[in-house]
Length: 527
Image (tube, rainbow, N blue to C red; front, top):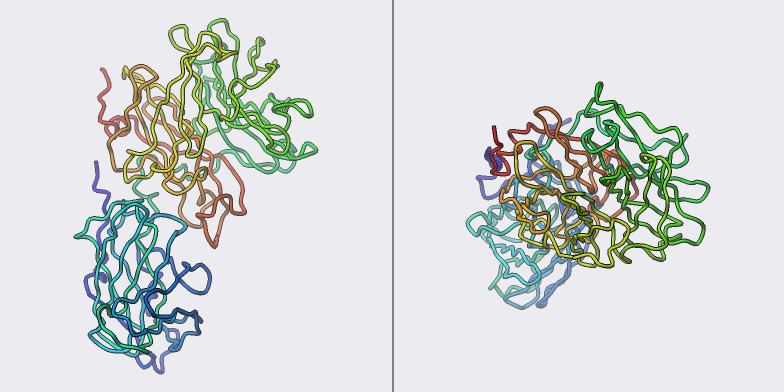
């Protein structure tokens, strides 16, 4: 595996840098770089747009004020101001960042602009988190009375990723100096953008499925692509079932069908839309799935019957559950069952193997994943049910809060089952990363021990910059392909970690070589 720790910019090797107004006197069009230009950083506290919520403790006070020294180095209109009291251990603190700190791609080095009252003063920064001991790093002021950057290097402390969610900052701790004025701005944290180091890399022409305002059933969103390969369909075609969202006439989610011929298959499409979509419309008014059909999982049984499992929701999201419909004509007309199979659960995937159906679904908060094993695909009443991929234990603690969306697949030449899943260390249903677990029996799963991300949400400004779901992976020739739902919109978003910010779902794709995937998993294929 390639080294996924990027080199530290040379600028980080010094303790502080500064720029006073005099440094740029008489210049026009100065090319002096700003802090935001530094590779590998994200500004978690600029007082113009998105800031942490700071509070003071121990006798000092905190306020947001106008920038007292606007210059090229810090042209912000506003900044934070701390006035010391008479205590020796005063500090300001911020908790509950929109996203926990991730050091997978960039080292734990932080930068903070300050105007200090005197040279030689020490500033201590603590990383804090619920249930974990804080870690600290210090920086010494080299210039007073002007904006300067302090660098806090936590590398030697080896802080874990996705654990710390807040800060404490002590200005000159241990010194009892009342009335000192400190100004601070632009807290730069290691970037959590992992896209460039992922195993799967995005298809350049993403998204592969876009909403279409001319088609009412999918005018707003497209998501949850579930692909059946030719050896999984009776007619030997490629199929993809996916969710479309639109007004028909009221807003709802329904499931459509797209196909490709095996003879002319192209992994990234185009796919041919079934002319009578949605092939699975919402149920009757007032029914358990009368409002929304999400999270599709199609599987053919031994007699050619197609079963489509889904998360059915009533109008207004009043109730939901794992539901199933079935088709005896190859997947074009479907019958509904009288009630959900399991209430309060959402669909992940379904597999038919050795005479049994393995139905995967998730639910609860925090979310957990289950599999029910049954010979009857239309009832789970007598099924054996197991918890499968557990919360936590994934690389960089990325799945410490929630796991969901397990999608099962095979790889030729490997006598194991693979499951892709989504996870988050921050929120219940706005995941940012996919990972893989493997199994010998479709019940007990082991997470792959590899710190390199399999796939993550897009970079800031990209169409999928918010979250990703439903990681569908399939093999074609010597390549592995990945389809996924991405949430977001192009351009600047004030807080892309805010769940379901104003945006929409589309379906994107990515790929990697089969040999690289198996190497990443630490598995060798049979000749």
